[in-house]
Image (cartoon, rainbow, N blue to C red; front, side):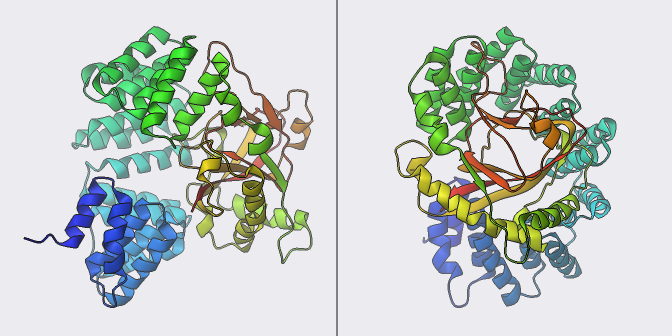
Length: 498
């Protein structure tokens, strides 16, 4: 019996064989009269590969071909929302509702669409509708709880959203992990650590909880416990890149850099482009004096500093940046930092700026094209993990804005989903930048957790309005905290080779 090619594509997607699935769906979706399912499956494959703009073409084609299908309009709304095109996503989702859709998934799409469009009250109402229909749906509960935290800083209200979902049968592991992140965001590391420790003890088969408990113990200085938990995880999934990454972190904290490098290298053998493993491999190589560190952290060639040209339509760079700041400030609707991000004492936009309709934001992505291409040319070809992925072209994978308040900073971090990452400065804390401590400067090379030996930052770049800094996504980078009564407004994005 022959297998339906779309059933085969679905099986390939479920198995994570994305390129193979796309090869199956492409001729079916490109057919002169493609089926509804072929268009939907092809869009799903493209989105799984990060090609959301390409997926949008097929979602639009589905609504043209099957205009009375609520599912087609739902799919279009989801993709529009993923691309940050909030107003268009809301319009498409309203069309789906008029055609009869009313399920939890659709209300979740509407919640994200309204949030992307800046209608936060509407987004909260949509999340409540989603949870009314499927109270055990963890994805909606976690997103809603994070929105409550960012809007009002009300830890109790956010926790109640998660607890209600758990009481209604939501899977406990993602809810517990989200709850711990909220405690961390509120600055209560002890509550987060105690929660994860108890959860790991009671649910020993949940490796994600064991790993999170290990990390929480490390951050509280409980290194014996951190190592014990990481070794438990390794005994159960010895070839997991994530577990090997966690062991590398713990061994660096314990002064066992040689073991850290061994575990990180083993992890890279399974996942060679894993940005976290690359970051920790470099850190371990630095700690033991391995020349691999110089290859991965070639600051001279890999960190580029570029001042953009004034975009067409503006008389000066200052005038352009003023309009860009105004557009970005209108998108900063939250009072608190996201629970899962690296910023502290500031806010972050949560949807892709590439979909924003404002002319100044659109001009930004044209203005950075030349510097990105220049940086790729400067880096050139090579065998290291960054240069070896060069194709001569790129796409923006994600883009967001961060606004730091006085005392704000970025914890040292890397970008797990990127290849090249960035910091673009719109407004800078000028008084702070001139301080002896380099307050407000971007720093490179300092890991986010204490290591033995200590590994302080090695490279600093002074921000200024209109300046773009580009670097490999695995490089540790953060902001030196500033104490002056000033703000810092930036755009960050990740680029991937195409």
